[in-house]
Length: 323
Image (cartoon, rainbow, N blue to C red; front, side, top):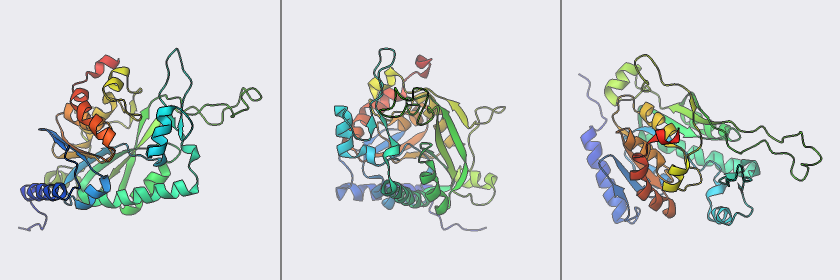
């Protein structure tokens, strides 16, 4: 019989608790870190956590990172609140409703693109170490910058397993030329966006998927039913008013969509889902609603406190209310 050098689950768990205790004693963890039976959330920089986490301790990652980087800086968030300038575009009112601001990724120049590559290269290195063999990564992105997200992940060794296409109409794109609306009324600078790509990646398995499932509980995606596999196109509108009242985050994703990803991400329903950029905690809430364990990280104190309050409410949110 072969003996593995990989620590047992119990040993990994004890080691992780010790590391968390050390981080907290060193001031790396905010004292407002929250735990529940199914999830744990930490006010901490994602890269700091990834550097200290035990290897092969996370079975899936579902995340919507700050892929523009610029839009979540303090100065840009302040401009968003004031509704004046910056990377956040304030869409016109529609049907009497004022739409939420949207980030304009066309403002990113060569330096912004390079920072984005460096950001995801660092993220790829950290995730490759902490994820188990066969673990899947679902990462939200945007058609304009997705190649900058995917390249570093592939270079690090992640297998690209496709894309999840979220069919959603926003007010991004479709605009007439700035200051030329009257001159060119039949021209759009870009197509109106009707979809959002989520890159799907997998850390390479140890041997066949069957054996990887037995050892690590990962390697595949949970089917919708025995007859119906998980699909790569999901119809999903924007988060409705009920969810936004609970968690008024600028990039809130709906529970109807996230619960489908979380359920698929843990094929046997075992292990933990990590969201290293949890924002208002919508992924953590979706995992809890599916009866799955998760851990969320958030560096922004305002969003961390929002998540602490929102997760219990979002996890109980009835998605049929959005129908």
